[in-house]
Length: 135
Image (cartoon, rainbow, N blue to C red; front, top):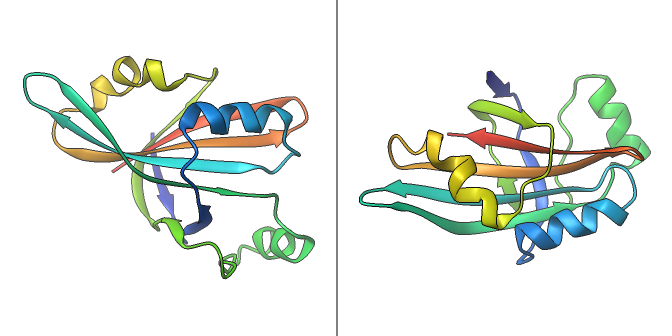
């Protein structure tokens, strides 16, 4: 599926691993959002390298109101890690996959050097989703 992100999504920079973010999401309040950026390189083998990551808490009431009106949410001063506005190949997964699963999960997208954002979003009390934004 193709997804066009009209405005960037901003996060507090974080050194937490994908597995740590997944663990935190399971006990966090709804709205917790975390993302890790990886580069994919395929030569004789698949090379996955972490380039950065970020986390953010649930939107404030003012931010929720902006989203409902279709307005961009302004980044908070500490939110300097961005998922840029762009068009991505997008995949939402029905289950969580950990860091050990990344080679198998990302191999189909390694047809050339590219970047992949792996997002963990705790949507509500019952559901946490994993999303891939592939550029």
